[in-house]
Image (cartoon, rainbow, N blue to C red; front, side, top):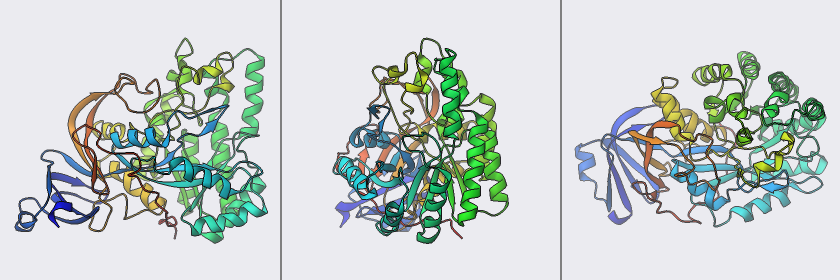
Length: 468
């Protein structure tokens, strides 16, 4: 049996709950045991391969619960395929993504889901699951929600933004929430008042304000806060849990805090771009700001303190990437002369674990909190724990050997995402992924990719594990 057994020895094992110096035994793709380094137990294990993790961290593979590979948007497609995007995720220490299958208006949920199954099938380097975007809430799609929950698609995303594309009105949102209250699904909400934003977009363009920075100015903080508040009240009426995606502003965090103080099952996610970038980037000259156009938009730097505080106090529980890359040349450029035509989205799936480790170095987070918001909580939130998100006997052997002392400079020249720029170009960070195992198979070996398309498996999910 020793040939299928791998030993990771000498590292500091960090989970959301513990930090322990331990050796980790992996067998048949799962964590078999942990034992004190150098103990009689550990010394007695016979193994086929030993990985030395001395002076390194041994952490669970990251769970990125918000990605958009190959997403059609604004007349183009996100530039990462499931193959390139999951490979880049592995390079960055992420071993599970949850992507979004899209229902088209007038079509069945099943049709959209099958299209995404087909896109990802035999392409992924790491494990993956799906959320379902509801673009057309009606009697038949509401019934389909129940079937999808049974199939392991246990979360549904609705949009208060993008009228004419993904937008749902309050009545449709309420009905979807009522359904999720009975079937155990979790509603994920893009909370921005899209109807009001469209008025401001039209007015800005009519006044000749066409540069990328106006994308941030029209998508006002108050319209994120208002939509967040409205989503929370609709969820209360429906008696349903709510997960607000890509929270970017202090006022929106305040709405989540107020709801959670009432004991409501309301959860919030933010993304690295809101923690590390700002409207200063959107205002970069020569249309460079287009690289930073995403929705919700980047905010003035002073909002970052509230986001970090929310992560520390658990009013924000998850950091995902909302990875949705578009190349600057030929894609972002579609919006020259009209910011509203710039495809919305940033690349980031490869950078999340490193940026959050930098937050540990900078004193924003503890090491255990890093693992909690990047691995354990997203796994629990979306019904994957303890298979994913921790290092414990029985868990999938999704393990990262992380060098906390290595220094690197983030750059498009060295990243593996299929996009022609980095949102963090030139940023120096401390900490780097060294080796990555996905279900016990080494996919990054000492900074070399040894994985393959098709290793990644589709992973059905249980329901949210935080619901009381």
